Structures are given as structure tokens and as C-alpha cells.
Amino acid sequence: MSNQPLPLQFVMSAQRGDQLPEMKAEVAFIGRSNVGKSSLVNAITGRKSLAKTSKTPGRTQLLNCFSTDNGFALIDCPGYGYAKVSRTTREAWSPMIRGYLRHSETLQATVVLVDGEIGPTKLDIEMLEWLSQHDLAFQVIATKHDKVKSSKREKRKKELAAGCGLEQSAIIWVSATTGVGIDRLRTRVRELWGAAG
Ligand code: GDP
Image (cartoon, rainbow, N blue to C red; front, side):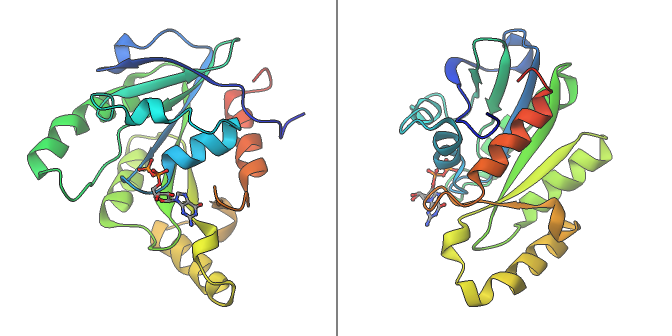
């Protein structure tokens, strides 16, 4: 069933993409700190604390690899733009993420998480532009659907899509809290992995 939880388990953390194990196919998850990435990884896997692994001190700046038994992976990338992290530190890990995204041979697409409540930040837009410039496929996910009042949703959906330079239909809205969009995201990740995922 395509909307069953993704059967992912933590495999390892790596300092560089070339240290990751060989996979059949993988999808990278990226977004600013606090966007809801850990909550979403838990929601799509149906596991309450799987993504805690990525938040373990020392692992927050690493590429965290979660995989199925048959070699399909989700690579959780470090969150960017955390206010307390100095610009220098951010720049220190950026080349690592960029190197991984550009050079992985099995990466199918990057899932870019944008906070649905606050819309795309400057760094989110820079990331989308950078992916486009390098011909790298991406899927934008808007998080925290439940935090946008229903009366404001249509307007917010339009604004968020415009801010990303995309059609509204290209964006998947999700909520880890209410479960909105979770089935759709699971199906999308399986599509990106390819039929065997
Ligand atoms: P990360 O830093 O990107 O991994 O983000 P977290 O998953 O830790 O979430 C950051 C904060 O947003 C936490 O306080 C979460 O409880 C909250 N959060 C995450 N997803 C949702 C959501 O779908 N709805 C609401 N209302 N809050 C969320």
C-alpha cells in the first residue's frame, strides 16, 4: 500500500556525502531549523522518536541516513539559518550540504521544507535558486498547515507558492500535528525513490 508508513531505520551519520553507504535511491530532506523536519520524519515513518537521532548533540551538523531494508534512503540534512548559529558556522557546513547534493549519484530529489506559517525565508529562496541553477530536482513541502487559520489558507497558499516561484499545485501542504498531507508525502517519496521503494 503506497500510503503505509515508510519503513525507515537510522543507519548512520556522516560528515560528508562520500562517507554515506551506497543506496539504490535516496531523497534528501532540508529546511531551516525549527521548520518541523524532525516531526515530519516521525510522521511519515509512523515512529514517535526516530528523528531524535538527528537531534542528538553532535549529529545536528551531520548528514543523517535513514534507510529501508532494501536500500531506499532518506538523508536528513542539517537545518540551516538557526539564529544562534553565527554566519561563519553556517558557511562552515554549507559546502558539506552543497557537495553532497551535487555529487551523490543516487540522489533522486531534494525535499525542501518551508514553514507554512511564516512562508519562504531568504535562505529558503536561496536554496531553491541554488538547486535550480544546478539542475537538481526538488519538491517543496509547506509545513504546519494547522497553524494557518482556515480563513487565511487560500491566500497563504497563493503567497507561499509565489514566494517560491512555483505553481500552487507543485507544493504539498502537510501537518505533522493533524496528519494533513502525510499520505501524499509518503506517496511522493516512494515515487521519487522509484517503483521498488
Ligand atoms: P526541526 O527543527 O525542523 O526538526 O523542527 P521540529 O520537528 O523539532 O519542530 C519545531 C517546532 O515546531 C516544535 O515545537 C514542533 O512541535 C513544532 N511543529 C512541528 N510540526 C508541526 C506541525 O505540523 N504543526 C504544529 N502546530 N507545530 C509543529
